[in-house]
Length: 376
Image 1 (cartoon, rainbow, N blue to C red):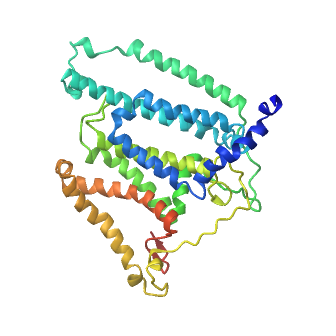
Image 2 (cartoon, helix red, strand yellow):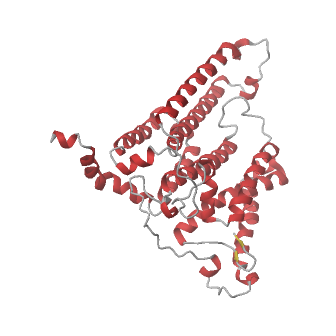
Image 3 (cartoon, rainbow, N blue to C red):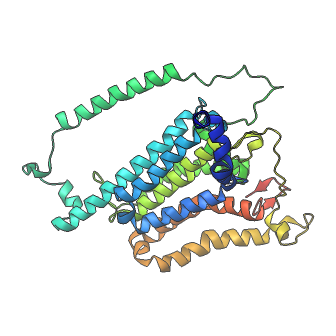
């Protein structure tokens, strides 16, 4: 009996039907349940941020995640996935990004509570005059010392990392023997994931341009001076919410999907599932016009009219409705800034909408003009 308890293969066989197989079933054939859980959790966190950022509330799921991670190490497929040279940074990212996101939001909640207790505006508190030393600290040593220590620690970690883990170098490139799956560098995996749901000109040109232009436009349509130089939630809740949704949910999660869940044939695999190169998903993707019964030979202007109407309602009708729903915010922004901000937000939300439409209805394109090669 003791030999069995010390045998990791026995533990893998024992836990596979109880724990590993159910987890794999959640991620296959796609992570819709996991993403739905993340979306719902994100909304709840924005509504009940004070309660959900409490260390006790956050510590329970973090401890559960750590326990599942340690238990999962008895699974050989999970070991190959986690300790692969390319994947180690993404595993670290799964720890670092949630921790510092929680830490920043927790500091924001504590600052807001301090604001209410002190009865003073946080922006005014951050701009106290030089003759008031109460809220001032010196750069040296309070900033320089932690930065120096952090530099030393990071240098040591990088040295240990480079010594213990081999560089993920593969065989020389050969056109007759391409890797499966063929993946972009980790920082491009989000764009590669978009290629599944959008045409290449959208995923490779339009979407990255939207990201760059949208980041450049933020200071112009969000002129709220509060939140600069200090953490706050109440004074910047909408800006922080949309930023975290775009960065954590729509970028970091896509990188994690492309690294840890996308396997041969760009199919989804569970974290404890063997990457079978012969796995084939039987899917028949259809366009929106085909779902409505239009013949592909119908003239494109008539065939794709419902798709154009759906996008017009989405990009024009929803902002008009939002103007009346969020009247106070819209009045602060003005017509031009509100229109630009709502356009970028709706373009960002189009990605998860398209993902769910593909997973639930096998929808390929909302507009498919194959005559001129324009697909949306």
